[in-house]
Amino acid sequence: MLSITSTPGRIGIQTTNAKLELHSPKGEQSITTTKPQLRINGSFPNIQIEKSQTNYEYGIRTSLEILEEGASLGKQSAYQAIGRIVSDGNRLKDIRIRVPAAVPELAMQNSQQPQGSLDIKLIGTTRPKTEVVGGYDIDFELGTVNAEYTPRKVEGNYTAGKVEVYMQQYPDINISYNIDTSA
Figure 1 (tube, helix red, strand yellow):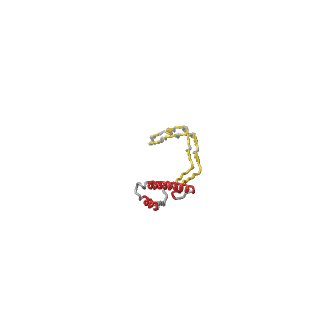
Figure 2 (figure 1 turned 180 degrees about the horizontal axis):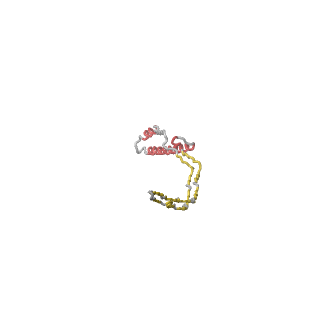
Figure 3 (figure 1 turned 120 degrees about the horizontal axis):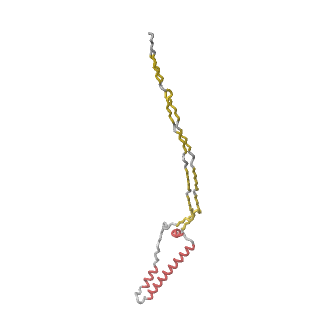
């Protein structure tokens, strides 16, 4: 009889995992700042209004201004009257040389009323002068931020992995036969 027995081969695998160890120390960081600054100097603003010219145009005057204007007009009228009287006197002086009709002409001129001028202003042409005195002076300085960072190196250790393959059991075939001679 023939007998065949086989033993299968077995492979063994031994693995060692790879290993990575990392250590990352923190970097150094420093931040320095300066605060922004705001400086305000000054006083409350005042508005000055100069309206004397505007008041004059509207006829609003002080007593002194009215007196000065009256005195000026009086002087002007006196000078005009003196000029007219001198002119009339010179004409009368030369009455013999010129036409003797000077007396009636002078009488006619002096009997007529001089025409005055009418000056009407509804709205003044000058506006009050305004000036703002005082106020504020604002000075602003920006703050600063200085940042420094020093990174650190990453420290690492790597252990490589291994795969070991070995024969745990070798294959085997066993063939045996028996010859039976009794038959």
